Image (cartoon, rainbow over all chains, first blue to last red; front, side, top):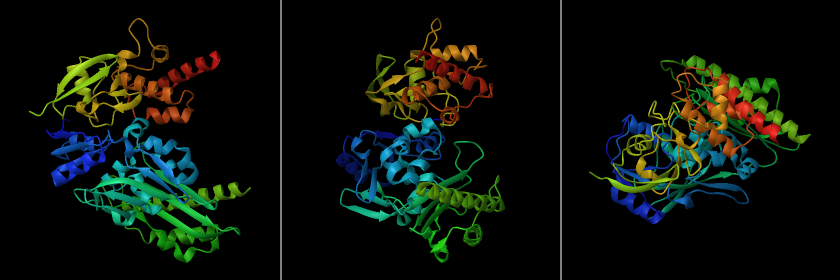
Amino acid sequence: MKPAPFQYHQPTNTQELLALLDLYRSNAKIISGGQSLAPMMNMRMAHIEELIDINQLSDLSFINQSQNQVKIGSMTRHEQVASSEQIDKHCPLLSYAAGTIGHYVIRQRGTIGGSLCHADPVAQMPLIALTLDANFHIKSIHEERQIRASDFFLGAMTTCLQENEFLQAISYPCFSNETAWAFELFNRRHGDYAIVSVALCLDYDNNQVIRNIRIGLNGVSDFAQDYSSACSSFLNQTFTEKWLDELTHHLLANFSPFDDERISSKYRLELAKTLIKKAFFRANQNYLKSRN
Amino acid sequence: MNEKKIHLVINQQGYDLELEPRKLLSDVIRDDCFLTGTHVGCEHGVCGACTILVDGKLLRSCLVYGVQMDGKHIETIESIGTHTKLSRFQQAMHEEHGLQCGYCTAGIVMTIEGLLRENPKPTEMEIQDALTGNLCRCTGYQNILKAIQRVLLADQEKS
């Protein structure tokens, strides 16, 4: 469990980082928290030539809230996201989900940007970014660009980041007072990656009619996926059990779960069914509670 | 090779080291600084045995490389208690039989040390959540939880 030899670089500002990325290109790999990358290096699943450590770049660690969005620096640790009052107030689905990542000690070190760039197919952060349609702020030595989550992720462990680019920050839309949310996951051991997880946001109007649904799932296809558009024919209705049964049934037909050595696709579908209903019930209950 | 010179402080003692970048911090602490209280279990961030504090924050020392620690202040199990004067949690672990083989214990003591510094009054759920990151194959955890409760109860009685 020792990594292969590599060259180590420790830029102290963004300009140095950009120059290093531009110089080493595909041989370079950024390490932030290293909670996924270091195990892969230690087990020699990843061979890195030039390791660029961005832990000195403290300006990449921040949480800023403006009128309608929360912007988070890519080096912000999971624990900071999970315990931020600002995020809890304006984007509570994100802070709650961050608190379910791995173990306490892992969250002290792992970063939001690291998790997003690593793009594990069942990790929380890609799921939340896709479900909330987050915006990714990307920078290279020549240009800056912003792209949507759905364009950032190309698939498992693959993003659209070019070899000389890095992720600077991510912005998430603020929730309104009429937004209810839930995050449900199931795993066999606390702290493991979930087998299936569900992220959900419901927008209600004054008459308790559901005007918008955002829902994303992990574990029912080969990457986290946003299924919000599949709910369109269920909008502008009130919450009833019958409505939820039909919606869940409709959603399940959109999934393409896979078998692996431990978990069958059938079991994944059963889990998805249970967790979707749980999420809707929880979100609806929270909404009703907030109105009383 | 491509050794880097770094300076770090472990338990208030300075070390000047010349390290190959790929050397894990856990190996640096044990082999270069001769502090063998930090145990190495899985070496890929699963077991929690190598948990230490860096600048007051919990960290698995097998998931960072020694070269990343230039200028950092590290605390290991050697700074927590001595054989003759155990820390309060170590004493409680002793009294509640919170260990058998002891291999995971250094990591568990450090995890609880870090948790209580951030959160002096953790809930039962928060304690269990923190402990899930440390594998113990002897105790079944119940006695470790009792040991933590013993410390928290003593705190409560004091205040």
